View (cartoon, helix red, strand yellow):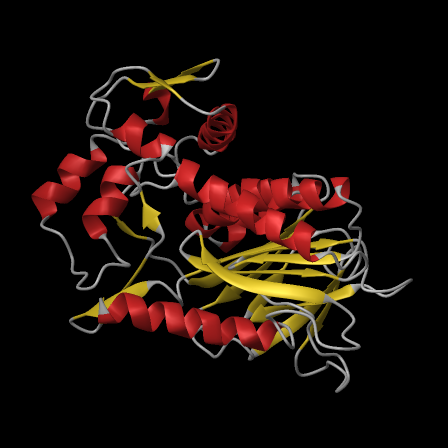
Length: 349
């Protein structure tokens, strides 16, 4: 319990660094903002033009609804019911079916490198638990046998797991899906300048001011939330970061991160510390950031270059920054060492 409480407190403290006065509107403040702990992370939403408290509250209520639908651990959730149905068909909310279809699409496109049926493995490792440790090899092998996205059947709003021991984990796609839904909700309610920050998923609506982009910080791995390697200047974009520096444990001097490789059953092993994807839709950046992490810099760069409207920033374990060709051609990125003193990030993953 102490570990969980410590994580919540650290996340809330970090959120305070992203935006000034993160809980409410002060007299003369240029925005209305609030922060809540949802989706197992700190979520901050800030409205800059239509500063309507009712709209802000309803946006958080929508986020909480998705949290209940997509959670692996909440016995009321659609995903929990699917995972514990012992292979029987489960009727789910239409949006649960939609996000599962989306996750299956990324699973197919990656050839199973990214797989939403990795849930038995993630539960076994339990990296965010109070006392994580390396599981026994035989249990890892058993969990790996349950991973196969092709065993998920979605017909209308009914979902069936062909393998009754398989477990769906939407952690790699849900936040992006939710961020896009929150953006659409805000736009439908007359909000056109805003920031939605769901932990490592940041969506900016419009621009900060006329002809002035938002500035999104790219965090320095294993450093404080206010220590960035550089800043992205973006308008109407999603910025999603996956990294090994926040959710991990150390055993016998070795770091085990939360990004699991379904090919080995173990946390990913390569030279990457983080992957940041810039795209129009957060649901695209979410699945893509995890897949790119597993691919490694060279293969991931080729993949991103093949996708229109998508750019990436890779940070290696030795501190090297690698960017796709569109960075600083289509998307401005300024390393921290070169950033002007007045360029402070409006939000950061």
